[in-house]
Picture 1 (tube, rainbow, N blue to C red):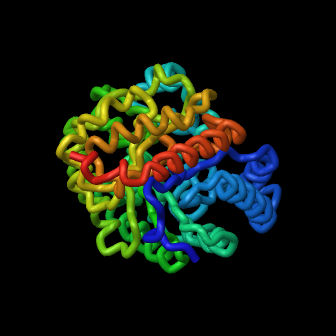
Picture 2 (tube, rainbow, N blue to C red):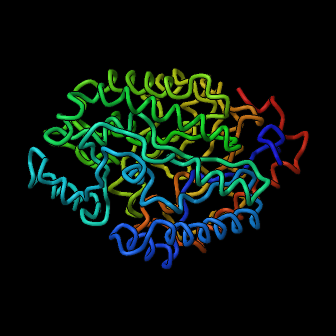
Length: 398
């Protein structure tokens, strides 16, 4: 079995998700409607995972994922894994918004479909029904010798997104009370993933960009947390996020990463968040993760120059945009990596897409053919960089 320590320079991986096939989508909808048993859905999901694995291995990806094929989206799937969570559409949650008309207009302006995007909402005390991702990782481990990466929703995202005033108070009076249970649940799951042979655990915390880039509003916002309370103290929110993430990854015994993005629910870049990583640097450096998995294929992410003097971690460098039909060339990707090498040691640079290719099962931002082509482009770029040998040295990093 390959180990992550044996990886070549510039390992290629995914952020996590992959578009679901029509057959898997039908099975997902039927299972959610109670029309088929869980075992029948798992059979369909197993086949889908093996197809995603085939695409990655044929492309030459170094660290593979299961494409999150068993998930409705990157965090709503927890409603199936945890008692006390109920999966509600944004339309259903609209009832609890302070300003219903404004909330509805906001969703429309952001191209966020209220009936197809679902959010898990705390309605009772959380209790583990089944492992969050370890079962799927065990299945994947049986079918590949490559190192495996698994993404989990981060504790700050979950504390912010699943606690809704008027719905969750009876179970947890505050977000902080909920967060304590979330940390325990996530820590236990990381341990299960390590036992399953996973090499890399990634925590998804995209909502942190909403904290720093979206101005406070009188209603709650959409960014992966449709009814999350507006921040009156962004620095306090970031500090709390650091505390929660560190509590999860402490002594994890596995490579850990933190993923940030500025929105990945639509191809309309104009409605997604924009801003450099500058206001997030302090929080990133305070988090005890091994790797920052960051967008850089979109100009909305700003310039890599912001990491001058702040490049003490691995970077999962976003080198292809999952939301565009255009497939980046290997030369374009190499140029982006060279920019990163001005600040990061080559041994600390990984190549990945900006975000998942299929974050929301019913609303992927890419189709499988385009996604596969982007994987091949990343692999070709990594091969070109490796072939340069001595030209890629530590002297390139500052």
